[in-house]
Length: 278
Length: 346
Image (cartoon, rainbow over all chains, first blue to last red):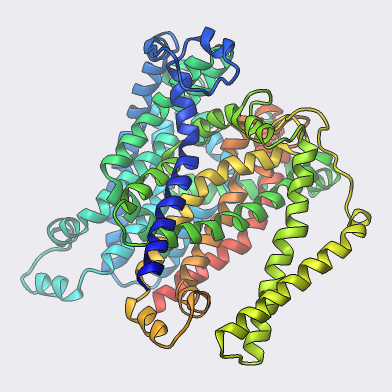
């Protein structure tokens, strides 16, 4: 038995380390390429080999001449209000769906769930047309409003599942004490759902940060493009400067990576609660 | 608000698929013409075929591998947290970034993929394909069939002694290998000769291969996701159940099949439906990596729809593509909803 256990442990580390190493290769390639000079990339036989000389200037150049700085800022301008808006509205709708008992509540929930699974292509043209008609095409508001509306489906579903777990007796005793519904929402439901809201916020933040399709559809001027669009731009402009593009890719990836590393627990919880409990 | 941006558009797209519209002038009702055109179009069928590849591989590969990796990292040993964290990293990346990094990995002359296969002695893509097929036909399939047959025989005859069980499994494996080797002469009749490049490694520019490269890159991101789902599922497997099965004398394989897998049923359902839906949604990576090229060979419906609607301004036609995509997804959405309803009733 002891021997069996030892084999198991060795297997765990050997397979685990191999897997992780393979999984990280793409990250290393990007990191190596981003700190090399173009000469080194061109002269070495394997462009993905570790750098001989580390040059941070690529990041600087991507940030300034490659405009990644502007795109970076724009993405924050889009992402933060979208997340906050979606969270605010979905706490309300989730509260309504879990607190009140009305006939259509299940149907509404199912519509929300179905909406989050729909192929985006069903929405592209009408949303594009709608934002043209509302005169919010090519503005931050246009993208933000769409994100809030679309993410509402997932957020409501997620939060409602969590709020269903709040014991009814808590609500009842509050009602006996004469609390209004809005007080119950702000004094009981919200504080109790805080962990779920945090998890959801982290998840939504990375999703919206990484969004490409909707920015592509709803934004056209360069000054307000988000970072994923910016990266594609950078690729178009400096397509021979791999080091710049690699630096740009890492800048794009940096924020979700940092957010993930800081809030890993919430991130993973969010993913599982959202999917499995569904 | 939700109605305005999500529900109304669905209805509008449905209506628009019966019209001809360039985005500016008045839309004109044309009945089923868009769909007729669509079904007569070669790119549509290529996209549909590619979507099918996506669906099969995007579910078939990440789900079992995600399960195995989850079981590995579920072992409570020091370092497993770090492994998990590092493994998850790919999940946080935007598809645009993934497309960029992987286009370097698939660089035909000195990319990592090329170097790897060159180091193994391959000279071109066609050889790689041949090797994969050989591996499947002569190693993987006989191995799987052999194990399965041995397992069935063992269970049917209710053989108890572990020595005999091994003997039966082993002999059924040998027989399967012999059969596959004797079929060796027959296989070429069944197989179409490789249409892949005979020179070099054009991972992303060989029309017959490019879709697989794209799927490969996105699987890199999908496996950790499936693993997250399974790890959550494994948390729900009570340790007493596993201990009880050990006491009953079940071996690892039996435990896996009779105890763990049934407990993971819900997680599997979710992992499969989500992977299916994601595979049908694949757009970002295709568009950012190849734009559907070369010659539309890597096109999928999502990407075809975008190009027709927003580059060629055929919005009615584009809507028709979206509707087809929607109808395909609908079945799986219903499965997922069913799941939700079941959970609700508990």
